[in-house]
Each structure stands twice: as C-alpha cells, then as structure tokens.
Image 1: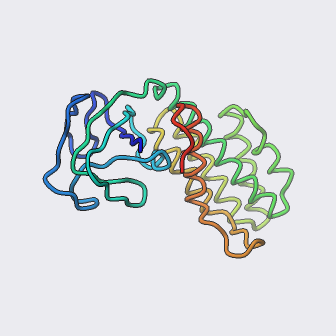
Image 2: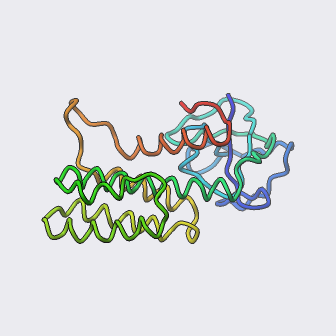
Length: 216
C-alpha cells in the first residue's frame, strides 16, 4: 500500500524536527500511537497533515492503523510529489474558501434567504467579491434571526482572510468546521459526519490534482 508524508521545507518532520534523507531508512525505537513511531498518511488522511512538502513513503513491517494516520517502526522516503507546490496549495486554499461559502449559502437558503445565498454560491467568485457577499449576507441573516447562517458567513470571512496569509491547512480546517456547523440533514435518517465528509472532499481534491489515485 502506498503511503505519504507531509514535511516542512528541507524534508524536516514538522513536529519531531527529524531531517529525512530520501532513500534511507529511518527507524523508531517503538510504535505507540501518537506518542512514538513513524507517522505516515494514507491518501484519505492527507488533509489533516498539510505542509510544505509531500513525499511518497515506503513502510517496513506491520502498520498500526489509526484514524487519520498509520504508525510504523521503519520507513523511508521514496520520492517527492512535485505536483504539490505553492501553486497547488494556493488553489486548494481557494477551493476550500469556496466550499466554505457553499456551506454558508446552503444555511442561508434553509433560512429562506435565497437572495443572499445566490451570490455566495456563485462559482469562481473573486475573494474580494466573496467577502463582500458574505458581509451582506451576514447582516441580512442577523436581521432575520438566522443566527446559524450569520455565523457561517463569518466562517467565509475567516477563510477569505486566511487565503495567502495563513497556511493552507488553516483554510482547509475552516471549511471542515463550516461543514460541521450546518444544520444536520436528517431526511435520510442519522446524518453523516459533515466534518469527516468535508475532509473526504479535500482528500479527493488532492488525489485528483496530484495524481495520487482515489482515496479510500
């Protein structure tokens, strides 16, 4: 199974500070979940660990499979994913800001504010226009007592402000939190976890953009 690892510039582990040498095996003394071991990603784990560099990694031995990662005793970097660069990260940030707007628009429409929802849901809206639409929609939602919709418009503003200023991981997190703030859809019984569903959307975006294969 193919695994991946996000690293800071220079193939540095963001948390441990370990400097990886591509092609050389790195071993951990033990493997205990989040406390020790070498942490790698499956394709559907990637949105939780976004960083500057993405590498394909090879694991040796049995993997401990946990939510959002796997933990192994030995691993090595096989090759860097060149398609994950500043441009791709910027595009993902824009896509996540647009997704945040979609969640806000859905909540506005649920509150009967379709006139405010329309501009937010428009595809390809520039960031400045998106921020303006979110501010106007937030005021309208507040006037009409739609507090959840107004709050989600605030998430849109947070996402827009974060693009190009904060790491892409921050914008992706805002989008996932916005999905989680929407009114649950219980029409088909117990609703799916919206936060996890949004992370799955991000994983699919990454897999398609970077040519990693289908997550899951």
